[in-house]
Amino acid sequence: MDYERERRMAEAHAKNALAESDWRMAGYHLFNASRMTLRMAATAEGRTKTSLIRLAERYKARGEQALGKTATRQGTPKVAGEGPAAAEGDKDTWAIAERPNTRLADVAGMNEMKDIIETHILMPMRHADVYAQYGIQPGSGVLMYGPPGTGKTFVARAIAGEVDAAFLPVEMKRVLSKWFGETEQLLGELFDAARSNARSVIFFDEAEALFPKRSSTNSSVMARVVPQLLQLINGLDPTKNCTILLGATNRPWLMDEAATRPGRFGRLVYVGPPDIEARAYMLEHAMRDTPCDGLDFPALAQRADGYSGADIAGERDSLCIEAKLAALKRTVRKVENANGGDVEPDPVTMADFDAAFARVPPSIKEQDLAQFTRFREEHSRI
Ligand SMILES: Nc1ncnc2c1ncn2[C@@H]1O[C@H](COP(=O)(O)OP(=O)(O)OP(=O)(O)O)[C@@H](O)[C@H]1O
Ligand SMILES: [Mg+2]
Image 1 (cartoon, rainbow, N blue to C red):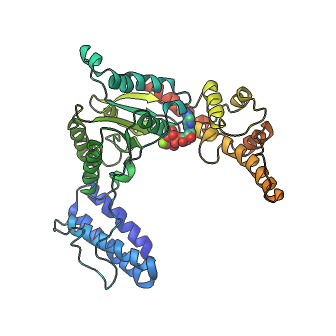
Image 2: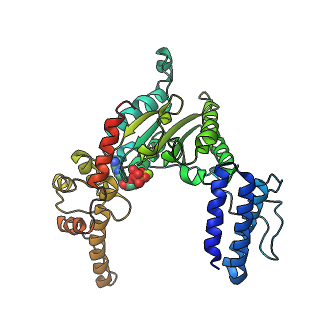
Image 3: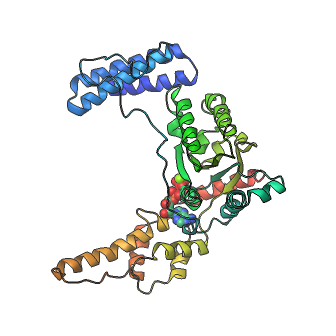
């Protein structure tokens, strides 16, 4: 029997049952998952064995939880003769906030987004009293949507960096796939972390999972998590902490229009592929501390039509990284041949970019863009 397959199936059934609030079935499937995992553990060895035993314990504890028993993680009885009872490392925590050192000047293009940031985030921070004179409430959230790699996460970090705020990223899909009770706990911890910082940016990535269309997937997200989230947002005291709420999605069509109701994400902003100016800025910015020789940035920007920000200047596998690596390899060869003598780093040339263009294709597809255009036309209201 394929225990791993059985385990996965039991877990999937349990998730469905939890989503339907059918605790009894959830308990049944969780105990099943625990049994299958223990069978796998019986033939495993070393660390794999230990982690399988821990997993089985977690399933069992969750099964008990689902059946309304009082099992807690610490109190989980051992289900086998070895392995620690409490599953350390199981608990996610949001308390560790990042302090990004990216700034808005690092972000190319995105003029609409930058305008909103200026009017609704930066200016109110500098001139709270003037905003009060006009009776304008600063804040409310901004939800960005657009194809992958266009810099949505990047700009969210840059906003935090710009105002020296703690950056608290939340991958919604990961949070929502948590077991019953854990999602609530994680969100509570997230807002505690926001409250313990004078300024923070909470960034909801994959925001489509948070506000799914009612007809699709499990409506329990809307029923359970959204009200809690709204309550947490309302509970923030703007006189004590400044908390900026940002969200991002590259599948906005999966979202319910309720996402942009007042008090939720107040603004929806499209973040598209960079225009020629943004591409030139990105290229120049990415190469600013690198030895270069004769790079024609306007020509490169022209050539990079259709490339996303990530394709051009991303940290991995981008045009700029590929071009730099080519020059770097030449330099390494020189260093190896120089036997300890001084070596000038070899500059990046247009030929290096020629090779990079040959290796890196644009990742955004025409049909993806067409989908966004359609969505924007249909939703020009939001
Ligand atoms: N507008 C931009 N200005 C400068 N760099 C950019 C820009 N857009 C993308 N990049 C570069 O590409 C990388 C990847 O972008 P990012 O992860 O922010 O894209 P994303 O829109 O969040 O994508 P996804 O929708 O897949 O999450 C960034 O870390 C950055 O290096
Ligand atoms: Mg992202």
